[in-house]
Image (cartoon, rainbow over all chains, first blue to last red):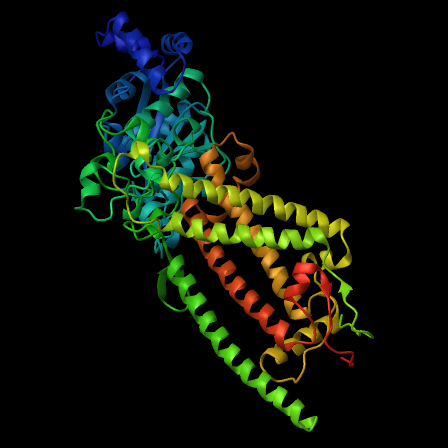
Length: 365
Length: 228
């Protein structure tokens, strides 16, 4: 793969007309939430800028991020992989394997020092010196540090890389650790989700190519353009929530009418993601649209916020081995205190009346 | 500190703003608890067209409105703590450094366990009550911070609420954690209110000074002039 090629050159060599190229740029600008005037900027970037070398490395993960990524509709994943970026290392997609593949990694790091991007799918397990994830005979942490050392920026794909996901759920035996807690000296962009939405992934890459800088991030390093609002804020079922119309069980009338899934444990109100606006599979649907609540997969430690099907999360009372939600704990506490008050009131009344009679006796009445 | 009265004349303790705040606060907490519980566990689903119903919308509106009243009241109360009389100040800074204060607290624990015969007389709060009020103040700020952080989520990342309280969410984990904490905080306040109301009634009957009427007319009246 030649890396000096621009995106437009690469597209032309694949037989794409200029007209289609401009259409592509317009759609891409729209996906990133840019105004029509910004299309020219996208076009210019695609025509003049060299494609970004990307090293896509895999730690502890399930490859669902890659699965999601290759289904991107706007822009098409093929356009991104074959034309926009120069995907120089990705052990699941690349043709080379074994020593050849690892040699390729070293070569890119050497050749493009400080100019390439590291995309991390999955996370490094730190326990037992990283022995729970071995790449090319060495712990994944080594590869991560090696790749990140000369990188321009690091993208943490998915919940594994950005918050740990299922392998970091309690008790986290392998000590799986999100990327931003391991790579401390490079800008890390977190793109959470299990997996993240395909168009969000390609959108982040396109933004970086177009503007040659990182997208605007929020306080938790997530791109604002996709993660600044909760699913609930833009949910098409929101009017049912405001009206007080809820699905009470999976097979009731409310479920058929598409009422709000709040009572079924939907985590839309606490989850920052773009599902309710961008949708999945080229905008066809997203979990709530197909009748199932959001499980909050793009939120930190979402596996530990069980149950998925109840509104209130369980609170673990350590040393006691009991899990109950806030209401159960609160009601139990209020009940105990209530009984205590009642008992105390009775005891006080007895004491008070006996004290009174004693005073009366003292006075000789 | 324990107070030795010489007459049975009422002493002016709680100024008008303090009493007003107490009752407005009590009312806002009542509204906040009811609406807050209903936000966590909404009433049964209603039928009809969503266009014509706004039940959760109204419940949330009253929660937010009462929250603002609670917040403004709290800010005002802190201000009054600075400019009001010294009884207005004590709930924000109990004398943790005072040995007699701790001794008084132990004495009052004994009083509630029926181990001492008589309560001591205080012009303001007795040490145990003061400690409880201090916990309540901390709890109130906790509810304000977590509450406004959750409110900021709806107002968006450009809002002043987010600028001031947005940091609370990653600090406590994620949004769902803040919900859980806010919920637990509500139950802590409910438990406080239960004990507070019970003790106020009990002390009014069994202690040597007035309590309930003091929070209404501001005057503390002692029932005897004997020594503490």
